[in-house]
Figure 1 (spheres, helix red, strand yellow):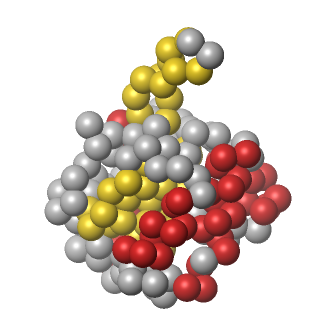
Figure 2: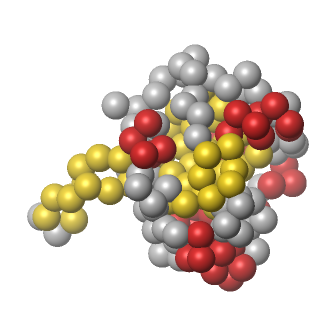
Length: 154
């Protein structure tokens, strides 16, 4: 079950790619701007790279909106992904997938007939008041940047 628009965004604290704690509520207070959160399965894989680089490429077009990537990868793997592609936004390590669970971005997947639990690629725009403004469950990597631009009126 994914979060619906107008729902309160679950708060969280996760380590970023530099091993520093990032707390959503604290960032919302400091920036006073929307936050775009996208959940991706695994750093430096083709779909995740397309998605993250697409977002990197529109950073200059989204004003004060913060972009946050979340995956189960540990901070070191997130750091390598960031360095390799010069992403320039926080990549957060949700190693126990508790945040993905809270956002409805963790669930059953299927590949080659085998079922398993994993990240369901999803994205959320959280307004400056901490509410879900838009939700994109099962979003495609290439549509992610376009969806964000469209929701911001770009």
